Length: 109
Length: 114
Image (tube, rainbow over all chains, first blue to last red; front, side, top):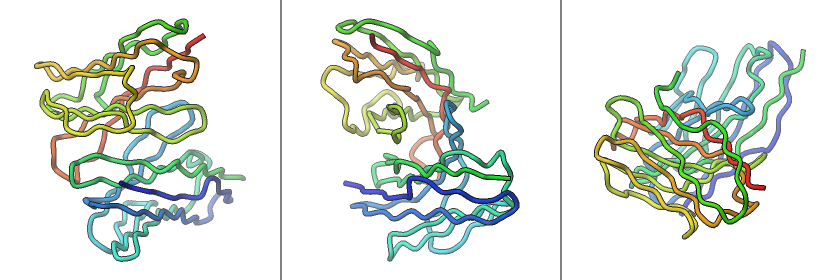
């Protein structure tokens, strides 16, 4: 089975940097995804990591350490529109994606 | 627009009833996934289909069933509905078994059981 942990809530200031952590335990690992979900809307894909290291995509970066079962999503130059829930999801060998409960990020002026 | 279409957007029904939720995946995607999201909770995986065949099953209740048709659209059937079944039901599709293929979500069907 899979167990995924993320902080429930985080608050940060506009223009700042925030790091959202995700730890996981899985019996078969084939990649870790981050999604963004605004309230009442569908999740949208942000990033994917399967090898250790950092993947950078504009203001967003994601890091993975497979040996530690750990990932983080780094958001730079925060904007008010970044206020949303951020979901960490682990894909198993069978292709199934299991989601964490999400981290609700509030960006304040 | 993700390219995944879900209908209906909203459903209000009474306890004990049966409903069918419909999903059309993105053009070319063979995999369809169903997730349930209750208020202020995470996405709970229900079931996955690949090219018409069931591929993985999550914590899907026996009252719930799903299928994927030859044209790749999928339906989720929920029967003997209970108040606790009220939730947002998402369908997602991906481009097959490639492990770096992300999920593309539809806008969801909001089910309210009264």
